[in-house]
Image (cartoon, rainbow, N blue to C red; front, top):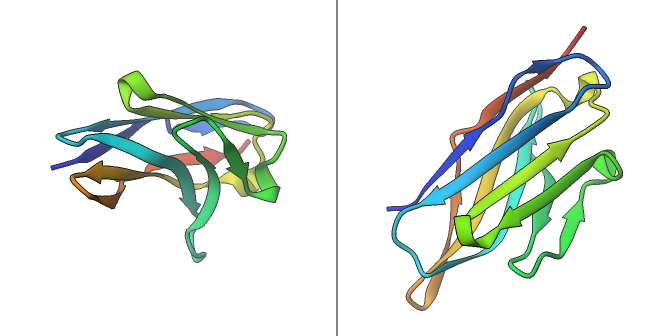
Length: 119
């Protein structure tokens, strides 16, 4: 069984910063892409950013230049550094990982962590 455990969500003022973490635990060979998604009230879940095992990244236009995704393959952990936060960044943030087990890969989601940007 694979679990993704997120941490770091909080309430922060506009212009502030937060760092989210997501650690994958369980029995698997390795992890391909890892990413962060978010879902605001009344909206669909959207991609925030994704990082390959080799470290290549891709971001949503709305967070480019403000958010940075990174990972530590030895710890099976992905991070999301969020700077210059705006009220519209308020959402539940979910971690996603594509895990390789045997000859197949499987997608897993974390339980979500709340980020609230408000004065």
